[in-house]
Image (cartoon, rainbow, N blue to C red; front, side, top):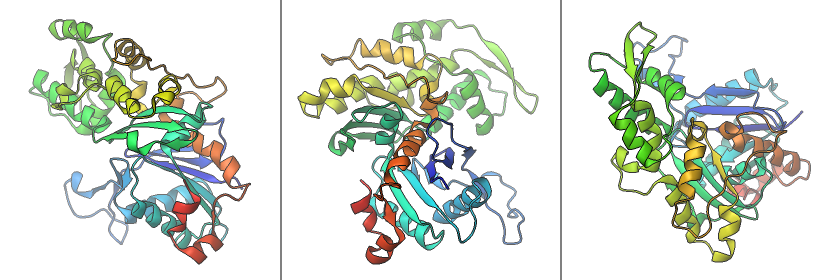
Length: 361
């Protein structure tokens, strides 16, 4: 049985057998509804009151919900059998606290009785997915943005940066902008999320965005409940916020300048290697026009060496940007488990949860 690979994001959970040249077998929303013990929904009439998010801003926050979700993934989705559990590799977000890693390995061995465990950082895995061991990842997730330089398979934590903004904040921004231009329409966040995925895009540059703000062709969109809204310049505001964070009310540099500043704290001997092997990850990075705008901003940045984006190999699955960490995990699983580099049940029994820091790095 192939090892399972699990990449639990703030919005989507990707899971499947470790087959690197295929997309994950399961890509599902990880938001859950709280159920009563008899299997019925809680009495609460508010939809928001019964929603559970196991993962918030990239980190597991609700362990009971995560256990239920993993039970569904492994036994129902991937066909594991009770008493015959296999090996599993998890992707680790940047800045994962040691306590979270220990709690995860404890859950997997003591509750799921797995035979082997490994975890590796998402930045490293995303580089593996495009055939690199050194470079820099810019991961624009649902709940956070991580910028992580990686040298010879090791994340340079002192130079890495996490920003507590992500796709969810862009959705809220879009909701605010659409509310201004469509004051009589009641918008659900779930509808705004779909509108963002369908319509949002990046202007060519800052001047083009200013021109769009003054004059932009609008089009109508019908919501599931029949309401009709007008969408115009708002679709560009979403992408522009990544290059002008002041739109979100933040005093910060745009994403390309942030990348350059992160790498500037690494030894200058590595600047070119890191900047010329930049990888974009996360669903937001696949926004229409984002890559082109990134290239243009890179040509204007303060660094002597310009950031250059790495294209994934042709044999890799389509939309690799959306699940590159999972693909890198599938590649790594083909190495660590056959070569016994993982945490075994005997390792865990002898050393306890802290063994994860010695075996998984």
